[in-house]
Length: 370
Ligand code: PAP
Image (cartoon, rainbow, N blue to C red; front, side):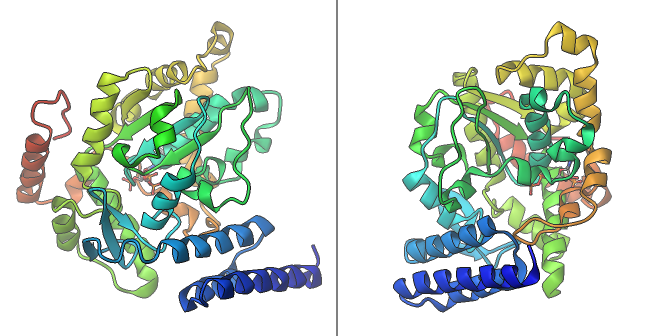
């Protein structure tokens, strides 16, 4: 598109957005977001989604102002809603969770990938997208595969973002809709709980989640130069104040249901997946209804998916560029290791976290201590 048409398109959407905002009491915050999008975001869909996001912020803005509030990690504040901390004024936020609960319609063929932030979401998205869609790309050159050029977050969206779409994602009888979510089990929309859809939960040991989140938050905060100290992060984590936390409640919620309903929820750990990726990918594919055939096994399909979606390959593809919400792609790929926390946690901190984890998971066959 030439520069002139692009400018006309932007002006048109700015006009539509401002008109819709005026209809919503002329909220100055929304206006600011829309103006930001005018400057930074390309693509027709992005404009529509940003305008819809602004309307959602406006619609829910009075609903959570009285909820318990704490200082945030990546956003200014976290609000406690239904027992869990949520960001606000963000695409994955208390506002979009509420909107999802109010409007989202699940289908029995859907697949949901549930995680706490920094527990392996990006990796799980890549593995599941590559596995479920493998037939679609098998006779095409590798360069045609979306994961060779795009961040897994662009290939497999959060269900919390579905409410930003003007039309819901198409339901295909042969291909499942793939969504991720950071929502705790008890906050999932009723239609997901009621439907026969499948959910995969990936959990990661708390010390690595803490350390990964600390780095991620500071990468994003670095732009405004207000970085947090590790001591501060540790204190917030142990109090349970992390996006979508407390950590232990989030994990426990999905774990318990995976025991009660093993055909609905598969519970995986980042550590197991790291230790033997082919073994757990095979289990995952079977659970999702996409088992690898003998012929595919003979051709080395499992090993191909594992190696193409390895940390090294994904981080190479995502060295440059950023998501439409402005987060650089490389921020989702740091070390990709188990036990990286050892560099930063003191013995006292490590013991304290182990103690809390043991207490919280008492009576469960779930060992997430070191
Ligand atoms: P998100 O919830 O914000 O999307 P998420 O993908 O869950 O983040 O977590 C990022 C972590 O997964 C990073 O861990 P680290 O900070 O300890 O390094 C990132 O490096 C790791 N990660 C990303 N891709 C892979 C991969 N292919 N294999 C293993 N780990 C990965």
